Image 1 (cartoon, rainbow, N blue to C red):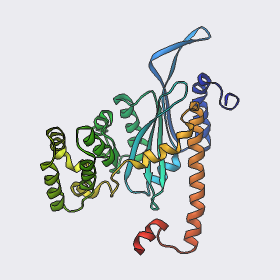
Image 2: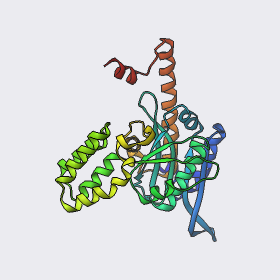
Image 3: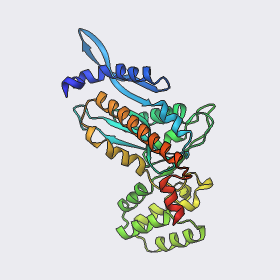
Image 4: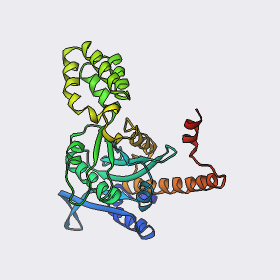
Length: 300
């Protein structure tokens, strides 16, 4: 591993070189590498600031997202290597309901400072100024604050909560597993009258603590209930499973040096884009009108 990627310290030094080399062959790529705002260490007798964070978005992913539903799932996954840290990801879904990685970031931890930075880059470099997009995530305080930041000249983003995280929080507040499953079903109801009936039925049987928790989030029901989603911004996506599923793809590289992680995201995206281009080209030659997954739904 050291022969290929260098030692752990060297990997951080080589990270900007790797990203610049990728950009040289892919000019539409966006990337940022920033030093830590406070930490420094001596290098050859000179104090130099250490690595802080990095983010990158491949231009091909930006182009692909222009043709996808305006929904993004974001999540973070822990790195398990020598210096640990967190990998932040933004994922979309194509017409065939396949994952499309959109943006990546290496940060020290999930906090307000890093989420604000990552979401700002997503809005500026991936979404652009003229498109309104729905972001689905858990209710991390850094994400909640970042969504409300106004970027001059850019349209607002719409935030929706992941149903799975929400129901897990409901369970942590004292609800039973059955009640947690009931809330999952309520989140996915399409008819408003049925939604109100089921919520009332659930509230009537709750203990005081989970009851208060549920009543407290009712004013924000548009964030988590499908029937209350104005404009259908979430396009039926009720969870951030897109991002979590891709994080499982990355599980095997979380212990590797940072340049190995960047190289893997490039290799994986490249493989997916090439394979899917071949598949779609063959499908179009057969004069198929719909992706396989959509055709299956239409045929039912």
